[in-house]
Image 1 (tube, rainbow, N blue to C red):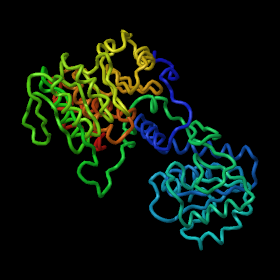
Image 2 (image 1 turned 180 degrees about the vertical axis):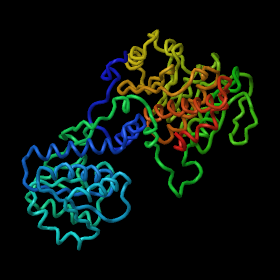
Image 3 (image 1 turned 90 degrees about the vertical axis):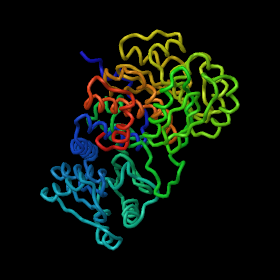
Image 4 (image 1 turned 120 degrees about the horizontal axis):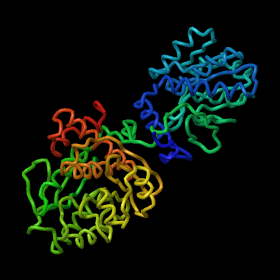
Length: 466
């Protein structure tokens, strides 16, 4: 029997529109269709409207999924109250909104398209006579100031005597007497409508999390994707190179490796460290390199003799990912944000806590460990926590116990940390690393190599077959 979903550290409080879009996409990946979510949202809005016993309702619909929510509400409302719809007929609608509009044309409901201010003026009586206006113009897709004809539409609604009920988020400039939020509130004071999103869409990583990764600007130049320094190697020569390739494939522009060991990979910049291990004689140079990097990934293959150097370098790192033998006491920490990627043994080494076998117990232990930073506790189900939030990742395969897969994870996390907050970077890195491993196993079976995973990263991370 599976644990009660409430035990999976369900998130509470306000949710950002960006995070909500990720949760929506994760719900779809779990089998709840976009149209099912829209139907639930529209039905919820209709119930809220009918609770006020209006005689006339005007539904204002945009061209995105928020507009589709409004169209569903109108379809349900017309059976109980006089309902009319004004919808933006300018530019391309989302496929779900287009679907709802086609359905409305068979619902014997008055539809009023508008594409300009001039189209709206004849519709003014609809605004003046309405008891309730439903604002489904933009929703979570809102950004910046609104333009015509929406600006006039908002002004006409504000000037009316009607009560205005906003669907999810009010359109900028629109007064809202009530906000009906879907799944979770995005603004204080909202009434939340449950639209049937599975709890696992929030508690587990999924393809929706990839929507949080910012797109590259068209005028981006070399370095905008981040410059990473990998510090490692010596006793275990391949580890830093696997981390570096993982970082490159995850979108970092420039990756340097500071290591005693050289491997001829032309895409990487090698900073030679003399000797067989990283020692005090390298500290000054490593500090200089760390101060120039956006993110430092440290510990991969470094061995047990270099921890004093790691702790000396850490305060000079803006952001960092610490892995493997860097996970020792005293625990190093970067100036701004830090990600730690321990397995169970390394976690016990830095906390003194022996982890229980069950996932929930592991999660509680990781959350309560008091580590100042984000922890990716690797396991059959990865636990990601910053001490406040907790999320789980179940991608991966038992074949990934082969050496080096954790180094690839550290590199992916480093690349993402250049562009995202630490918690989001860690969650996505765990998801992508596991999916890349699964892709290799699907092709090669149990004889996988960690290096096989590297070329699978872009097809997962950049949403080609994610």
